[in-house]
Length: 161
Image 1 (cartoon, rainbow, N blue to C red):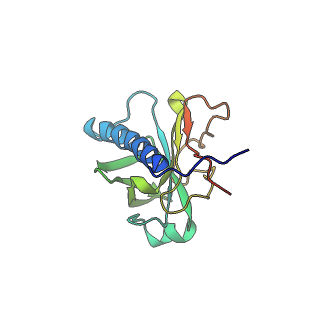
Image 2 (cartoon, rainbow, N blue to C red):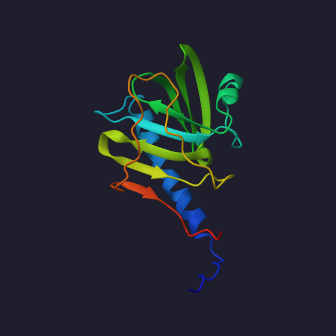
């Protein structure tokens, strides 16, 4: 079997950037709606804590040195969305905290209310897995990304091993 020729066009990067723009657009709509999620929508967002421009408190960075998952559902505030990322207020062990997350640090976005999910390769580290647990205060446990692939988009351009 012959390997596909190397592309001089970075298709994987272009697609990843376009799909991250979906996350930005969704979060932007929530921000424009006064920070209120419509209906039963809620989001699990997984991101690389050590990625460039991520800003989280030291206590969270020590607890989650690689990746963490946050839940945007009932208890979040001050959602601000820019072209490059978002910031949001969340409570961790009853301590109010502001997180700043660039879209390039996101590795997964899931809205279990409608069985929708996106998985990304981290811009700075392409080989890490997505954790199973969300770590901010939430009455629910995180939903797993659907194994049957329904409404879940995973991009893998056959990286050479």
